[in-house]
Length: 203
Image (cartoon, rainbow, N blue to C red; front, side, top):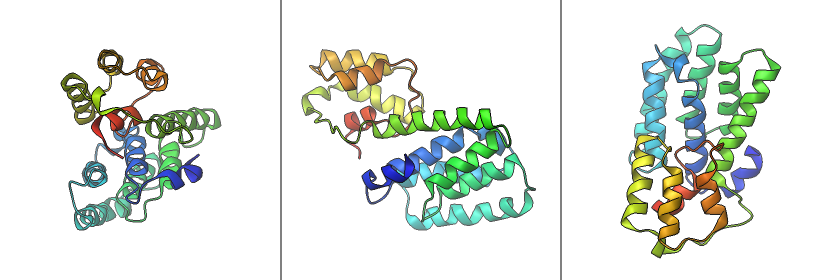
C-alpha cells in the first residue's frame, strides 16, 4: 500500500510524513526517555504543514543521533529509529512502519499482523480512495464546520467526527463517502484525515 500510495503524495510528501508521525505516536510510550525523538516527531508534523524550514528539520534529525547511539538494541531503539525516519529529508514511510511494528511487538507474528492492519487503517484515513477524488463544495465550509475541523486537527482528538458529519450535512453536503467516513466509529482518525483536509483545504 505504501509503495503504491507514494505516487499520490504531493511534492512535500505531507500526507506520508503525517502517517509516519501517527505511526510513531503509537509507540510514544517507548520514547519516555527519548526527549529529542519526541521533539523530532513534533517538528516533523510542523514541517509537513509548512510551519518550519528544512534546516530546522535537519536540526531535529541531528539531535536524535546521541539517542540512537546510546540506546541498546530493543523496542525503544526501534521507536527512536521510527522518529528518526520522520525527520529524514529522504523520508522512508515503509521504514517507519516496520520500526513501529518491531517497537510494538518485537517477535509476535500475530501482533505484527494486528499492527499492520492498524497502519493500513491509518493510510485509508489519510488517503481515502485515490481512484475516486471528491469535489468539495466551498459552500460546505461553514463557520461550524471549519471550527470543528480546526479543533480536531490541532488537538489530535477526532472524537467529534460524527458531529462534523452532521454539520457538513446541515451545510448541504450529501456526499456518502464523506459522511460515512466521519460516522464510521471503527475508523481511526489522525492528522491528515482526508475529510478534515478537504474541509481545511489542505493537500
